[in-house]
Length: 349
Image (cartoon, rainbow, N blue to C red):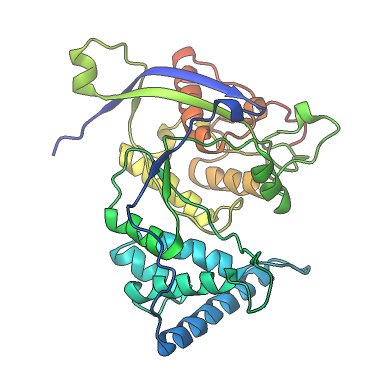
């Protein structure tokens, strides 16, 4: 089988730190024509099994969180399990089976979701003689999906009838510079606290780095097959020789070292290359103390200590979902010019 070659023909980059909320596009709402069931049928046996399963998941979650949290902490197991149940409603085959095992979903889907509905309604119904203003446990207000992907009507019906929710779609939106995202990353101590010199807070691979800096931006490339690019006479800037993707759930900022080495090895194999063929590496390098160290160790293990390595996050901050596309543009420019950017703000090895 002949391998299709893919060419990059147009790089475009934009990046900025600041509040981009005025330009955030409005979502498209996907609606079901069904309404929420306000009196779900749940047998006593199902209610007991559901309560037992929820308790088991809560205990598992508590033990997992406590292992990495020496201080007192508060979490809502009901909020988490309900939000995940809404995702589970759209899962199938292996994914559904694995989610059910991890979340202790013992009831079949057609009885599980009504049980979640009954629980939520019980939490929001005022007691007899109590205030009409029921306590509301805000669990999840919508499911956000990628625009353009097909959604089964049955999934929308499940969300509407059992959770009273609709779905919204966004087309590639990742607007991260806002209070909620900043608060979340601050809570896990992933952001830099170098507030005295914010312009120099993002410093990948620097010995004094203390976290990343949130930013927003985009990188755009046109990726075409060789045949298509040649046929229209496009000016080819680079070739995507190969690549690899792995799924690493080890930690939100500290990747599994073995998984990092594996994805590099798989990318080399996909391109039909050896480590010695690589003359330049653009690293993810977000400026977190642990993440940069693990990435540097993985790069050294696969490519040795002599290959040039650089990163752009000292210039731009971390664009989260936009970081990879921006990196692709930077790498293409480096190949075109024969020059790579320096690590900005790196003072200590």
